[in-house]
Length: 420
Image (tube, rainbow, N blue to C red; front, side):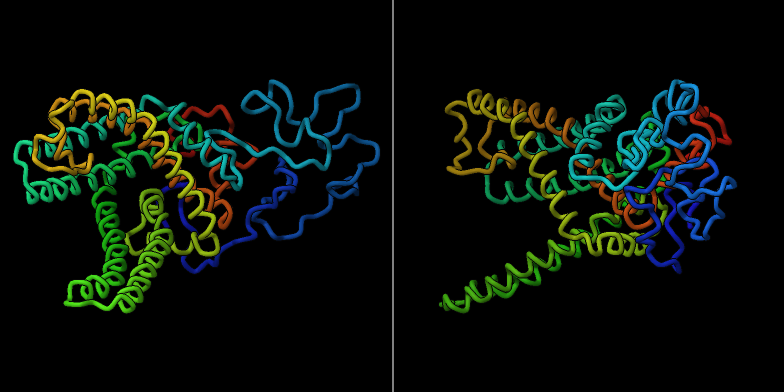
């Protein structure tokens, strides 16, 4: 258990509570109604009728009061200044879910996850874009410097060294982006503003563990890939390889890639679990596998869709700069003596073209880095809502009074206010 209200995981001895969250068509919690966690049958109301049926001689929840009075929970006096789930709707209709922040507190659809990621950037753009801009600047400066050096010293060895030299920077940038933006999204879900200093203060104690977790995940996935690809690579390097055997070993290598992808999705929620639940590396890996279990295809599909969309928009942003870089390079694009080159490694691009491409990469990274990180966090939140009724805990932490979280207008600076 952790000291983080709202995000604390269930006890290790507690089985997954698949039925802990009330169904989507259940009436919203109202004052006096039993908690969704309470399985003890409640006593019938004093007036003799059951919930959901017409009450003799009195008004019903959700229906009009006598004398044209205001409906329960509706009107300017309601929390957040608007109609509440149980008030203005027809009796029997599915209630609206509370939405103190970027997402409604209930199981999320694909569109709501993507919209929540974009809303995080839109509502908290100073903090989100400040984080991504700083990280993108570091990444592009290092990448451009390495490519520039590779251009000035053209050789296959230098190109390979330049490609490898960018990997540590990419890993560190990814770890910082994950840590900082995870804490930002956790506050945005509750509708709370947060500064860059507060995000850094929350994330800093977990950075080393997150780095270790990231490296361990990468080693596991790469180890599986190498294990599957090693036989075919070794056989092809031998003299006179047989095509049939090479094809068979190629199938084995392909299966290695499939298994690596399956494991990657299994471990994809470990980073948010480590940051928000304040757990260790092993426990975070176990939590990710438990949350993904039974939902692998859904998480894989949403992750793939978001990756494709982010890559598409990133390409649209960077394309004009790439065209401009080619125009700036002109005939000097092949001066390095290499007839082919990968734009990411920059062996064939002169410095002026590299600077133009770096500007495009800077703009694209600033916009897309927070969206990618937010999607992963929201997937984690969605799985916990579906399996562990996290929406109820988040509603309480957000201060929604109907969930026992205090009053809606509580001052976030109040030390007694619930916080994450």
